Amino acid sequence: MVRRLEELVAELPFLEGMQTKDLELIAGCGSNVHFGAGDVLFRAGDPADAFFVIRDGSVAIETH
Image 1 (cartoon, rainbow, N blue to C red):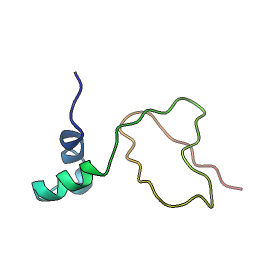
Image 2: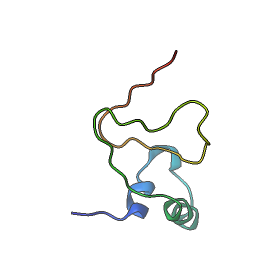
Image 3: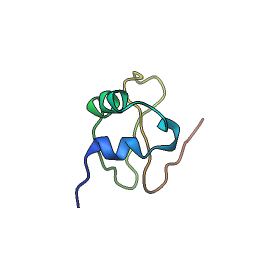
């Protein structure tokens, strides 16, 4: 079953208590994407133009 982004955003614990209109605004700016093993989400120096919420799986943070 495909769930709407508004529903997924409303379930995030750190957004608990936000008004529906604000949750809708956040959801309207987002997209539901999938990454495969080994995919790079971002690198140091990239523009800070995305916010990721990991709902399933894990992410490794590499530093040099």
